[in-house]
Each structure stands twice: as structure tokens, then as C-alpha cells.
Image (spheres, helix red, strand yellow):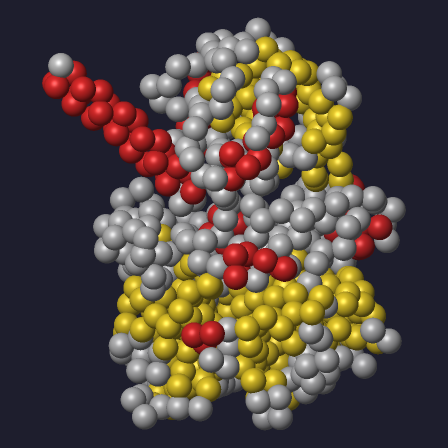
Length: 617
């Protein structure tokens, strides 16, 4: 009897632990949830390699002073650009060979003839994204020019990989010296083990008095704003980490939810004697914090995305905003904020439960056949289960059905693969799991497969099968699989595509509380349905505000090239543009002053560095 009781207790404990591990696996991002910049940039499109597949060459009020390619010729290699003194620093991304991530160093002292002088290699299986910045640190502990470099991990074998960020002495840019490598947050243990810091998509450093600090985007933790003391860059320390959704819930926009509200990028600027951090918080909007005392940051302001989408309305499109707050800067005199929303998908979906005559919200998977004007999805739903290896499943569909799958335990890609292996399904709909970070929340899936894949809230999934949904019970976080019979037949659904354009720019009045949106700006091709494919990515990526003029903004616009806009009567008006003969693919944009003139550096993902001068009014 005692042995039977002990066996039963151990069985129940194992069940609870397994459920807990499944929940943890789902919530740490390892299932494929897009919850950081790493997944956002995990798959980019390109348009070089010929005269087709890109926008026509153009140039107005922009002069190319100089340009130079990197010494490795394949597309997608270049990421961000930083500049300090007479040197430019370009990140090496992971599109082809993640063994050779790092930073290219160019001597630009002669702007018409940039030349590569160094390559600072990152650790094995590690690449560099948006964290390329050099600052001069002058403290009682250290004096020198320091490169801050983010570290993201790639490859199937991750031996020697470094997460976090690295600090590198580039006082002599030709002979660099690592000061600290793989600095970051190690708790809780991340996707790459307890000895590797959480990966970081972007890093930004600043000096305040005798102190120097860095802030990073933590790709693996809900507390994704991590601030470090780097006053001695040889011995950096974690000061404080923040989860803005929890600590400042006013940033969460109810109609977008917090499932995709995460930090993507940030800058810090001294304004009126305070250190003000401007954070781009994806679907949370643009957020201002006072970080004069980094251990106790305070809320100043944030933005909401106008619903319906304000820029789309100008083109006659009545659609919800994408969100996707990517990167922002203050104007020279700090009275404006200019912000860039990144959006790689020009289509959203309209989803209907045709049995109940209701609409429901859904997002599309990243690398599965997209719902677009040429492809819709309709059929009767059938509950497949969790669709993980070894799970009980519903078996084959009848060729007209859509498999409904519960999130949890394994990756989205594994779930889709198992549905495909069963056969007979036109697509997959995944609904969210039980947890305070799940339930009705929507998210974006990084997922591969050969049939369309969509994601919906848990309440929607339950509704397909007329199953009672209890939101309070879901939010208490107790892991529990859905009380729906495997193989149950549910409602019929229909999903169609809606063109909603690519990413664009916001102009806000700088202030406190909710920021006032004054205007939006996009290149016209971004809202032309005929340019939804075949012309490269027509989304904005980054903005750099002029250091000489309060009314001038420079943009890297991927296939839209390099753009210049002027603020006139609280409106953004394009005054300059450049696309090269074989197309452009600009990721980064950064100011540089030389001999009293303002230049702008752009990093072309498929080429290298460009040096521009705006010549217009």
C-alpha cells in the first residue's frame, strides 16, 4: 500500500513538473514566439543581384560623397552602423555564415574614399545586429574610446557563443582590445544555458558625470530593459532590470494587447539636466523614462498607435495599426520625437467564424505560406491537440479541415510539422496557453512549414468548439491543457488578406503623459498594393535627427533607400532621397560631422558603407 501511494505521489509530481517545464519552455521564447528583435530580424528579404526586383534608381538633394563595400561579397551581411571620430563601424549579421559575426571598421578620414582597416570578430556562433556604438568613457576608473557591441547567437552548434554585449577598446581602431565579453543578465537561465548571458539585440551607452552606463534589450526575459554600470568597462555590473509592461502598465495599448509588447531599441539623451531614455517598445509604443538614477527609473510619457491606422487612412485603408515601434530619436531642440515603425508584412488578415457570424483577431506565422490576395483559407476546424512529438493527435484530416492546435511544450514549427505529417489539413490555427503572459493575448510566431499557420487567443480557440473559457482561471497561471476532446469537430472559419502597407514614420510633440501624434510619413510605394512584393522590403528601419537643424530627419528605408524629411508646420515633408542603380537595402543611419559639415552614414545590408550629404533647402 505504501509503495502504491508513493508511486502515485511521484507520478503526480512528475506530471506537475512536466507541465511546469512545458510552460517554462513556452514562455522563454524557445517555442518560436516573436518576443524580441532577434526574431523580428530573423529573416530579411533582399533585392540586389540584378536590375529586377527593386525600386528604380533616384536621387534628389542627396549627394553620395563616398562608398565602399565590405570585403565579403554576399547579401544580407551588413547590419547597423556607428561612427566615432574618423571611423565607421558596421555590424556583421548572420545571413550566411554565423561563424564570422563581428564589426567591420572603416577609415573615413577621406570621405570620398572610405577603406576597411580592421575586422573585430565576435565569438563563434555569434553575430551583431543593432548594437554598434562607440563612446568615449572618461571616469575615475577608465579613459578611452569603447565600442559597445550586442551579441546574438546562431547556428546549430553553439560552442563558444557569447550572449549579452561586449566592450572593446578602440582608442586605436586598427588594434582593438576586448575589455569585457558576453556581459549580460544570466538569471533565469536562458536558452543557451546558465553560463551564457541572455542574448541582446541592441545596446546603447552614455556617460553621466563620473559614471557611464549601458542599456540593453534582453531577448530572453520579460524584464527586457537591463541597465549596466560600465564606468570601468573591464568590470561592468548589472544595476537594474525593468519589465515596462508590469512596472508602467499605462504603456500597454488594450486594442493591441501586451503579447507583442517588448523592447526593441533605445537612446538616452540629457534634457534639462535629466538623463532621458527613449524606448521603442514594439506594440507598447514609444516610452520616455527618467533614468537619471538608473536604479529607480520613473515614467515620463508614452505613445499609443492611432486606431484605425492614421497613415493607412491617408491612402483610403481603414485598418488596425501594426504597432511595431522600432527606433526613435529626439530632435535637436527636443521639442519633437521622430519614430520609425518597422513592418515587413504589407498584409494583415481578416478572420471570420462563419458558423457564429463573428470576426476574430489573428496573426500569421513567419515562414509558412502567407494569406494574401492569391491565397485564402477556409474550412471546418478540428482539434488536433498540442501536436508535439509523442502526443496523442487527431490523425488525418479529410482534406477540407483546419487543424486547431494548443500552444505549449514544443515549438510552433514542430506542431506544424506534425499536422503536415498527419495529412489532410489546409492550415493550422494555434491558440494561446494558460499563463499570465498567455490567454487572450496575441503574438507573432516564428515558424516554418508548408501550410498556412495562424495564431489566436485562447478564448477564440475555445470558442471554435463551444467550450467555456474562464479568463480568471487562465490568468492565474496554473498549467492546464484545454478541456477539448482530441478530434472534436468545431466551427467553420474563413481567413482573407487585407493590404495594410509597410512600416512608416511618426512625428510626436515631445511632452509628458500620452504623446500627441502630429503627423505620419511613408514613401508612396509603401502603400501601393502593386508593390506588396517584388520590390524588396519597403519599410522604414531607423531615423537619425540632424545635430545642426531642429527640423531635419534622415531615414534608412531598406529598399526605399536613403530618405530625408523636413518638419514644416508640424508635418513631415520629404525633401531628399537616394536609391542606387542596382537598388538599395539600408539598415542603419548615423550622423557624422567633419570639418564643420554634417554628413550621414548609411549601412547597406548587401554592400557596405555609404557617406551622404544633404544638399537641399
